[in-house]
Image 1 (cartoon, rainbow, N blue to C red):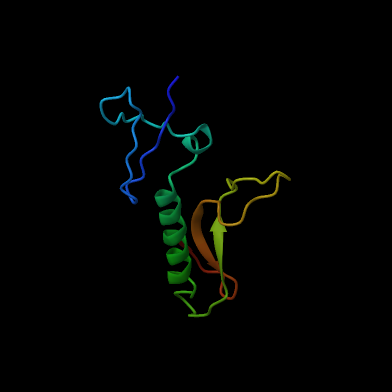
Image 2 (cartoon, helix red, strand yellow):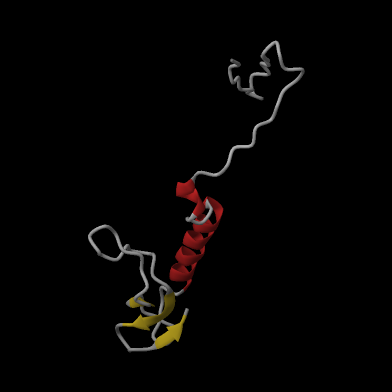
Length: 105
């Protein structure tokens, strides 16, 4: 029976079993828990672009007041208590609470 030995490129340590001529590369598949979710880079990009959109529209274009609230669809992800998770709904526009102006995101 052979043992599986790993190679760490940072330490430059290579140990191979006596019955193997050279290193054998074994592909590691992505775990099932990460296949259904978006990659970290895409999620991070969405969070950053959403924050930038909220910041750029934090002032009403008509009255220049900061009493602006975002308008979101009701498609937010739900937590285990069936409550919407903040920041996961689709941002469609903004509404000024002072002059009732609305504009798209």
